Amino acid sequence: MTPVLVPQEVPTPQPEEGLLLRLVAARTKQEVLHQLLEGIPGLRGLTLWGEDGTSLIAWAGERQEQNGERLPLSEDPEYWLSSEPVIKFPPEILAVAELRLLYLDAQDTSVRLGNKLATLTAAAKTDALTGLPNRHALEADLKRLDASNNAFAVVFIDLDGFKAINDRYGHALGDSLLKGYGLWLSRVTGPWGRVYRMGGDEYLLLMTDFPGSPETFQEWAHERLQIPFVDGVSASIGIAWRHENSSISEVMRLADQRMYQAKSERSGLPPSRRTDRRTTYKIPTQSS
Image 1 (spheres, rainbow, N blue to C red):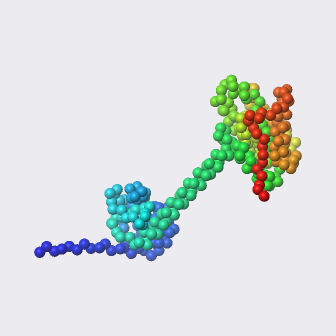
Image 2 (image 1 turned 90 degrees about the horizontal axis):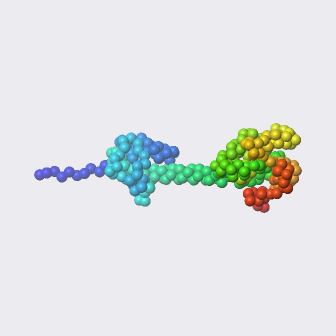
Image 3 (image 1 turned 120 degrees about the vertical axis):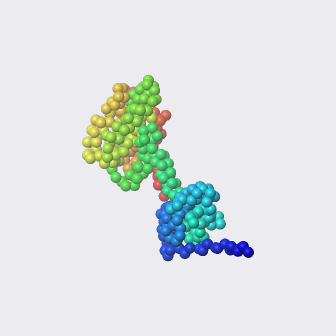
């Protein structure tokens, strides 16, 4: 008579003491697998799968083949495990492992969203052509200065003769000149302040740490900022200091008016504001 073979149930291995705590402390999915591999006797390899058990995520020890048996970590799983040899895992181990894996997923998502938000915020405050801070960045910086009561000077800069160069040689050369001038302004300003592109061929310097008196700064600005940087193109500037008016908006308008006055004196034409490019600046107000 042929004997009947009764299949033996694979015993559940007893995990090492402290495995649950090590799983909770795992910093990566790979580390979760390593802790399971080291903490459960008899295991030679573990593979983690996602997307209904079809997408390989990570493995430790012997890697399992694509057609190997997979164990869902819960009734509505995000992850599946395959092991070598195939074993029955303690349910508390699977539960804690899945919770840690889900936590690591949430952490990764938070980092990605934070990085994306930082990138979008930086882009919103950066001029796309020159890479300089734009009007939105200026508003934020002035708001901080207004709260601090620190001294500063505002310098409006408008390029004279740029339109003729742009019309004659095209926008590609014009854009290159705008980028080059912005870079030059940043180098000249150095650690003393910040350069902004307001739009068109208009820039602004916000000088907060100039190592000298207002009179010295006035001389420096007229000497360094009004030089022609290409044939036929120079700059008109207007400077105003915070101490000239208690309102930052008025300080900005004063610098703007002085710039247009300087432009009219250089061109021999009456001062006029080119409203097609820049609107009146308004400093953000804090809600009461």
